[in-house]
Image 1 (tube, helix red, strand yellow):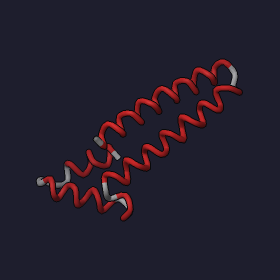
Image 2 (cartoon, rainbow, N blue to C red; image 1 turned 90 degrees about the horizontal axis):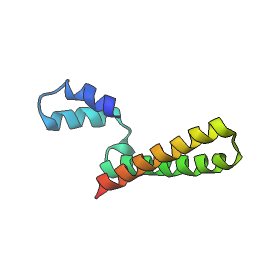
Image 3 (cartoon, rainbow, N blue to C red; image 1 turned 45 degrees about the vertical axis):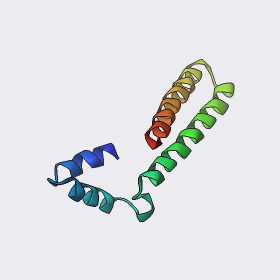
Image 4 (cartoon, rainbow, N blue to C red; image 1 turned 90 degrees about the vertical axis):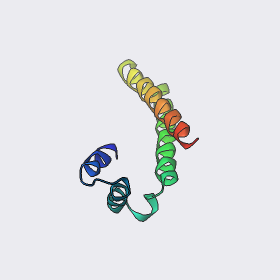
Length: 85
């Protein structure tokens, strides 16, 4: 989504035009900030839960990868919740 915004940023001069072009690429239900943040939070929680379940049953290398997924997912989750404040 950030790459899409970067592409749209170069296409128009005014911020209102940029937002309109950006929203034209998204489905109707994702045009609000709350919807896209909610979906991102939902998938962040799902990723953390799945990685923590897999952490218990995996080998040493996969455990390190699952731990990394939990840390990155938690960081993204905190940033998304912070952006809603």
